[in-house]
Image (cartoon, rainbow, N blue to C red):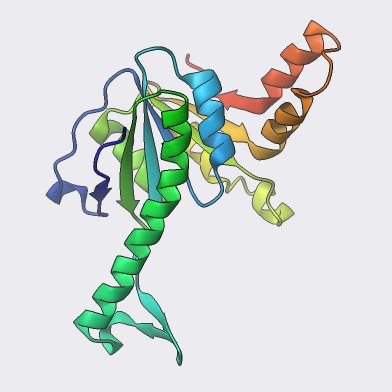
Length: 207
């Protein structure tokens, strides 16, 4: 079972954060990241390990209304709070999908909500604060080749800039889907399996 969801704002100094244990695997999740959680369960977790689901969401600046998006200052406190409660419920519902997956695998799971408009920076800031030693984050093909060329993928950026004590694994959605499909196909050669697994995840190399 999971514990109560822990929420962290952008100002982490005002929040008490417990240090991560060495057997904690932090899995960054968004709307459609079941494949990331499944990969972590299959490859990053050993007996006695715990998965920490980390969901990063942006600060609420504008709120949708029948007349369009309005800033928080244009609405009453009650209206703003109603919308915040709705968003909180959506996030809890989203995390329940991943929590169920961990529970089915009988792996202890905990959750952390992080409010930030800069996901990569938030992750990098939290690594030394929480003493995170293992992160799994997903990546998808970008619709813009320009973004790929500039290397703006969050997972790759975190992997490149994370401290050496933290191992960052970037899981490709395309390769994970291929792996799931190949599980139903006959095995061809051991070498092909080895080469395929090497394509799934790019681990930070330690000097």
